[in-house]
Length: 247
Image 1 (cartoon, rainbow, N blue to C red):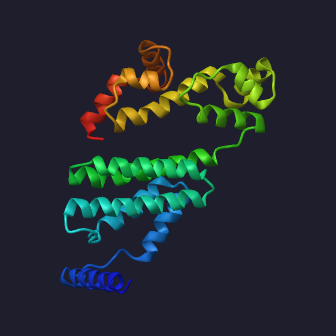
Image 2: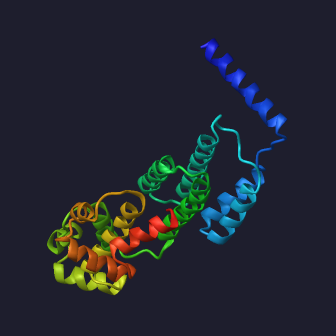
């Protein structure tokens, strides 16, 4: 135990000396508070402005290797963004799933510039999560229906089972859902599947055929049709944009 404590103290002295030699100061706590407040209020422009100020300063020394140090810094940012999202009442599992996905993506990046830029993508993703949470609430039955769809996004969801889940008749649920959400249940299911599949197209090399199977679309042609309907692009075109922009 004592040796561990001494090791930590030695590392502390090493880091302190490094910062002293390089005239480095951590970003002020005030800037961090401003960033978290902007995230919590879902003000993306303000959040990016504060992040610009923070990133105009030198990053902390978190590893001997520069790339590893920057990645560690982004993981710290991811933790802060996650806590800000949780503070707004975002579902904890959703916040942690996004955090895990971001950290996994960070580990795949090899270019220093791409790592820097991903911090802004990560910021936008957490703010979008908060915005979704802050949207006008639906009736309890529709909220429950939406939650059921989101939790079973990899399965084939039938109207009858959804109606049974919320204790309504299929016809009444269909009408109520369309009135409150603005689109039919089937359109909402397909749109939700498309939105979820965009992550895999952006951040993995999983084949389009496998993504089709994973999200339980009847075939690749139908998946492509639905993807184009909701995004204006085919899955292949969407992935090509990722490669072009170095997502």
